[in-house]
Length: 67
Image 1 (tube, rainbow, N blue to C red):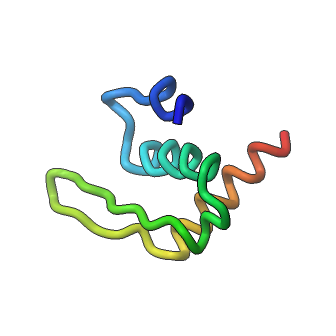
Image 2: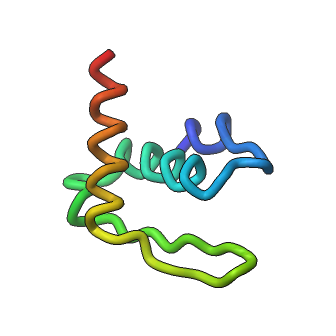
């Protein structure tokens, strides 16, 4: 979770914020694709991140970790 605190910025967009949160959770959660649920909250309301969106985020994080 240090990664979350270190890289959080007030002006993060929704996608960047979701990716930062997902990265932090992937560090501490086993099988994150099945064990994480994320809700995005904006001025317009809230919604759950879909399984497909979460899968894409986790895949991007895994690819970045390989570099």
